[in-house]
Length: 393
Ligand code: AMP
Image (cartoon, rainbow, N blue to C red):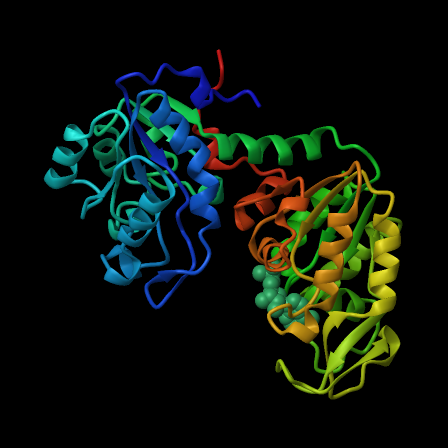
């Protein structure tokens, strides 16, 4: 990685404005998974230990029309951060403005200030220069550790970089190194596992990966569309009829690379307790739907994976929210966890959630914090939040 990182800067007595990705899942005002906050700790602790005062900013949820909504206040993340680090953490109500300015001014080395949700300011998602400038005026340096938001050109991810010298945080650095080296110089065999609901979301990534990988194993709802494109009747399964032609084209182009399921777990209805059975891909009954890959597919995919040296996985193999249809996803996670001498990269989003749910996160080489960002990176797109960071001289 040729970006300047926080290790390249002398932090003594300096103020660091750090874009983190604290967009954590909430339920009834509580954080249900703090992985994103934990992932930012190495950067926050490094800055504090090296004499910086740390100002954190992030978005949280999707407040409507860029208006403040107490449901999405960053206070809950500030309180939680206070329990995870030794340093004092204070929260200020406001993204910019007089209260924020005086809190930032008073902030001492070794202390943390958390700003209010950047999306409470309608200028954030417009990448408005005046907001970027106001944010930049709070600090000496801008640090971006929010890989999960790097595919968005917003004031707090890219705009602010115009007004301050910048550095990548450790999480950003780790993400770029794992994803970057997998694409640039993968150890082979290099296998991609792609699942999730739709082909249409991942056409670009499939096209890009066809040029790079040795094998693509397909599961999840998108497998239904691929199977339908090959003429298999898919009953009531989720099938994207409008991209059948594109799916058929990808199958033709990737004939030697793309593998599809050979059997499926089908259900009578879309429900956790639905009646279900295993059928071969030729035999999906007209009024049933495929909600997971079947055991023969799991065995076939495990066989492919057994010799892999680099694996990238994005998207669950089935409706993993329902335990009975999570079996394919869990089996793939266990298979990856058992690989020796292989780089295993989980591309954020639902596959990261599934790996965490199975308690296998520690067994993977890298679990990305950015679903959308990692997909765009794999597609070969330049992420605006990364492009905005200064290179090493
Ligand atoms: P994505 O956001 O594209 O990665 O899709 C994840 C979603 O795909 C999850 O909520 C899964 O429940 C859903 N999914 C996976 N397999 C299927 C399937 N066979 N039918 C319907 N939805 C599926």
